[in-house]
Image (cartoon, rainbow, N blue to C red; front, side):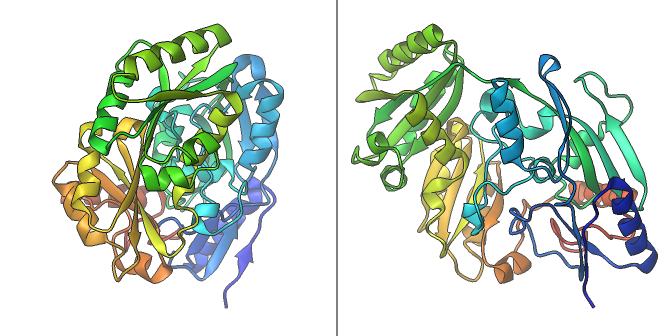
Length: 404
């Protein structure tokens, strides 16, 4: 008989995991459940629901640090930070609608466990780079604590780096601490219209290599641009290349003007101001161009920015848009037997990148490699880390790799 454990305290989490270890009963670890469709279907009859672990436990705006229980919603945290003109600088994406769920339902623990980062990653770093401390329960049923409230507070193993991107396969996090940063006064976006993919990548590279402190660089081919909710983007009639600058008002105005002058050699330029600019980057962050095409699978491909355009060329029947200056390629493909896995893996292998399947039917996610295939040395390391934290394979077994 399956059951769901919904603890309200860290001690209850430990007790639930200890029971599972003693009974050798695997657990599916979930927070708000908004990212349940990421990864392979979990091979467990019981669930450990951490959505009852909510609330901010420490917030010191002057020290740029915030702690919260792992089930606390990103929406709640962002609302609190907004009052103090601060933000989560890694720009956590909301994949709820992309995965056929509700918007705004994701938790802080879930974002960190999946190491999800938005367009600002090219400047501010990934979610793991803002992860300062964690309390949790390992797959041994043992409580542990690592890190603290400052960046340079790590002695011994930096467990936050291990937890980030582990998808709940190593531990159930109960409380997390993150670095926060001031929210920019202004956000402007310089637009260039009508560029082919390869030329757009050149334009983004030029902008990123400039002195203008670009915090976002994305390219939407015509099909993706038409789906934008920002009128100037949707109604341009072609592709849109977008370069974001943030900061004090006068500086942003100056840098945006300079970027438009520099990029004018590529094509017609325009700019988005605060609200439209914010709306556009929310769409990029949340993979909005592919949300409504629910019958298609979605892949997240990381390659060298100079190779981004080659991915789409080598994957038939794909729709595409680019983030991170071309280093992140989002692909939408027809959902067949393997959701395009063979074609995507083949294209990426020749470019030295990696690819993860983000959206596909459950039967496809159970039958193909969802995460990038590992070589023998990396696979052995993955197994050793799993054995160290969770020797009986109690937590989210099979979520990332079969048998792990």
